[in-house]
Image (cartoon, rainbow, N blue to C red; front, side, top):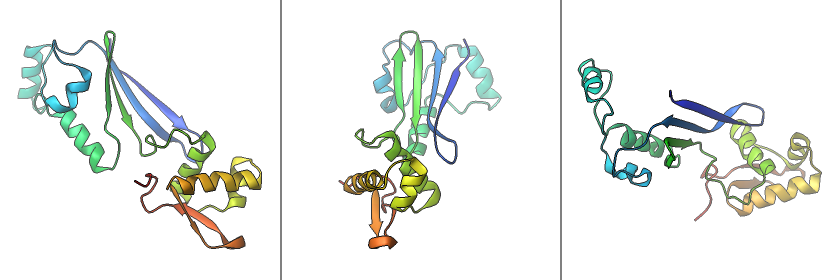
Length: 174
């Protein structure tokens, strides 16, 4: 069975992939677990003859280099490590975007607000109320929660109050 790709999209002004999931039929080599994959750095071809042909043709780089390279690339971009799962006879890899690690107490509107801020840099409470279809007090409550969790920074006072992503760009304070 060929690999299957699945993209989930967030709602907002721009379509943006939330997570990328790839699964393929087949199990891991004997004795290898999904949780150990990031540390092993090894590979085992299902078809050694085909592997050697592809290696000679310079189509593949070598066994065991893909997963460590994938993890290093994700980390260099400030993204969470991929998740590896063996589910029955399928192997699944999930690559997360920059907002996948958000606090689970955030509601969908607050998550969309962070995406809005990433695309637009600034939002006011009246804009939040208009864009997300809530009352002004609810917009203020949403923004206060994002501030309390360290995702958003408040700038100005009174009618000039505006909100931007915190310098950590969406990561919680320690």
